[in-house]
Length: 256
Image (cartoon, rainbow, N blue to C red; front, top):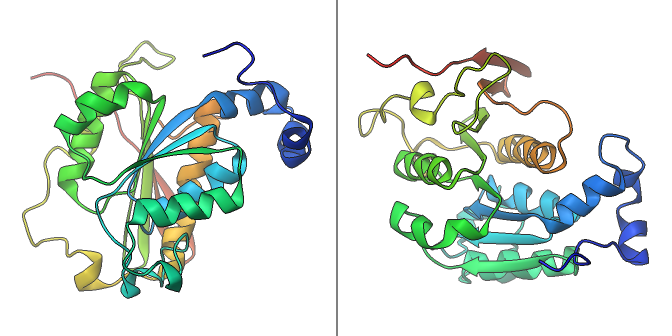
């Protein structure tokens, strides 16, 4: 990257003024966002707010990996798409929305399903991975790929009225010198097939995906700017019906 690539224009300084005023972000943090390359798995319920807020925040390059098309039942929660997008590739619809939101953001579209094989070819070009998928196969593949690439992973999930998210950096150690946990330290194995129904079967309240997706975007911004304490080793849980947040701590499992 050219050393001048992260310089902010006058227009960008005005656009991001409220970020730059924050001591935890400042001009240096905004430049870090502009340099950043973030890959988002899924342009659906979680991916929509993630993409919108990271695009608005000035993340320089956003990659979108999704092999689906926009359907009418998506629009109750996938707010980056609209009625005019029906039938389009989600990556195309999301890229168009981001271009309207912030012309300074470059979007890289991957109209294909995320997999370990795909990640081995593409993930090296990104600094951060965000998993907004809706199935355990992709979640495990994302966790393995991010660990192998040595980049942070922000991963979230929703169902009905409940959501959760965490941050994974298993290639690093904590302040005590202990290795950070892996995804499998939190979820050692996928649940039996059919035990946890998909949103298409059980339903999901649309605004819930906005809550969890926005929190995922916040974690990404913290990671990219160095502000605050990311959710490493902590699983944040949200119960929408009781308006309650809880946090569960988890650690690296000891080798047998």
